[in-house]
Length: 244
Length: 244
DNA sequence: TAGCAATGTGTATTTCTTACACAATGCAAA
DNA sequence: TTTGCATTGTGTAAGAAATACACATTGCTA
Image 1 (cartoon, rainbow over the protein chains, first blue to last red):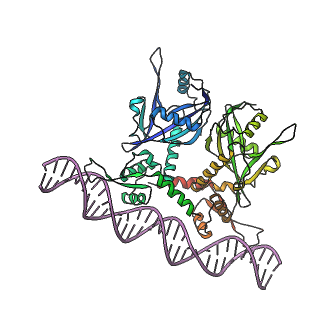
Image 2: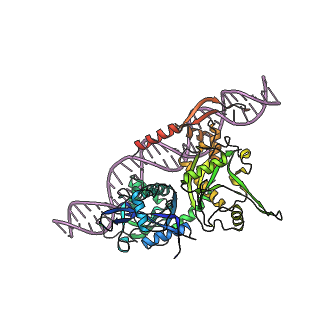
Image 3: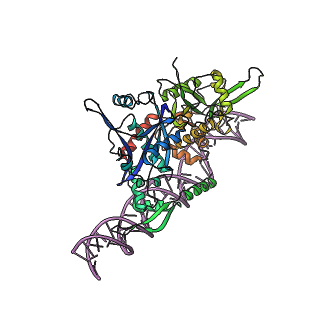
């Protein structure tokens, strides 16, 4: 087992999409006084861990994500480093760190990563019963500076989603236009006209229509699509070539 | 004197605008063998320094910026953390670190900040003769992973400049529309139609026309403008209020 | 005073964005 | 089997924004 770097951690903000809400994966943090049984701490944290000696930041983030979701090859991107000297200073957080008894500095820099997962592929409830999905607008009390980290991650996601086709990472491989629209509306907090949205996304060559249709719905079934990163990458290069 | 944190530094990518070019401030790094006089190292670095114990990242970046430019209250924004285990591994970099003889880890995480300065206000040549401005498309060999840091900073600047009125930070307090256009063209690497550019920026309420004009030019002198952050902040809030 | 070099301005064209209504589909319930 | 239901799939007109483009004005210089 490698040693951890005492003053350096990563925190992953893991986003999922379900029940027509943008969700974030949080872990419960619980501590009772061993004598009195009094509840000292009962709140939630993002998924974070210290970086190991000799480990790259990106690797540490991927490892952390794997440990909680069991997933690899997942969208994962650094967005900001949090280095306030006060970020672990609250009373609860100090109690918690003493309880963990790790060799941890009291000025830990945490590098924030955000991750987009298809939440139909991961069932944290079974492997990690302490991990739960929460709608991003209904998160409980968070430990450390994790509320700030989440806020910054959301801001970053909202920016990024308008610039690059990353929203697909949150959907199952095959999806309908409606699902895509719901997702964008959720992330950006806006509503789009259904016809205009469809017109717009249908221009994207990398959105590939399938012969397949929805099944088991009590109405006209919608056509399914897949996102082709391959086509996206190629058309993106073309654009650069022809611009100026 | 406080102690440095051995595995944590900040690097400032300091941008300036001069001679119709976007420039970056670099420091020469020179080392000769004391016996033979052989030149071991002769390249350039960004402006970086280790974070002190008990110091916030933002403070460390502002301090580093102050040390090289003598300026405070300057636009300074974090953009990415660099944590590859190999980032100090090259032979030259190892020689340099031994030479400095600081108590430094060999896995240093560096948090990148980019800064925009009005280069007419700073004359690094006098205070720090080893610091020089280089056009961003003509930088010499850079130490460590600083080429990567610079590339990422540029990418971030190009994104940011399209989203927020930060370009003004690179200009003198009073400037002409032409100067503003040259700056945007420089940063984004594009050309704009002069009339359309003017039409566009004139819509921005936070661009305040002055009675003052250019002097000492051999042609019709242009009107001068200032940027009002105050107006920008207020109109930005209005926008949010009236949206939805 | 004539020439020069850059400023300052308006309009027509095209492209993109927005607003909006109805027929078609397939399941479910009667 | 039929009817009702909910949601899909489609086109067009109006408005807004982006683009392309030419000439008179200014103040300095020779």
